[in-house]
Amino acid sequence: MEISKYQEIATRTHNDELNLNEYITCYGLGLTQSTGNVTDLIKQHMFCNVPIDKGIMINELSEALWNIANLTNVLGINLDEIAGHSVNTILMNKPNQTINLDNGIKRGDKVLFQGSKYLVDGSIGNLLLISNDKDDRQVTVQDVKKVDKE
Image 1 (spheres, rainbow, N blue to C red):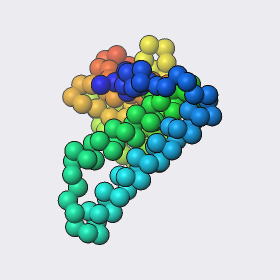
Image 2 (image 1 turned 90 degrees about the vertical axis):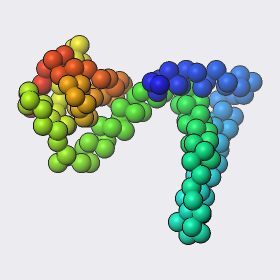
Image 3 (image 1 turned 60 degrees about the horizontal axis):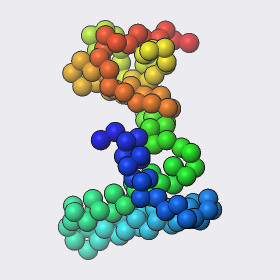
Image 4 (image 1 turned 120 degrees about the vertical axis):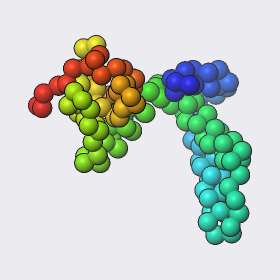
């Protein structure tokens, strides 16, 4: 599922009776609770040898994602933008990781796709995973043009 589609669906359960500060508090505290529960599962696993129950972990992470989707929605932020920003930040912090492709495009390169600049995040076969702060896409290698170093 695309992250922006998830955000659209998740926000359908949004409570319309709160004001902005109440929304921020509700979703922020919900996120804190969910991540605390995930932390507890990890702590129990690491220090008490309790196996991590995948079903419980999925429930907690899905609750965290729901809170993130709703919090970002009330703040007018699209999850695609956050995901793109996250990938770009990761790549800036790991500049030596590259993917060698036949056309000379490698991980971290800037490419042009439909008039917009993107960063190459990875490849799957002849597909490139590209992103910028507003969008992420899977495109074929032939659909992009490498941008010369600036």
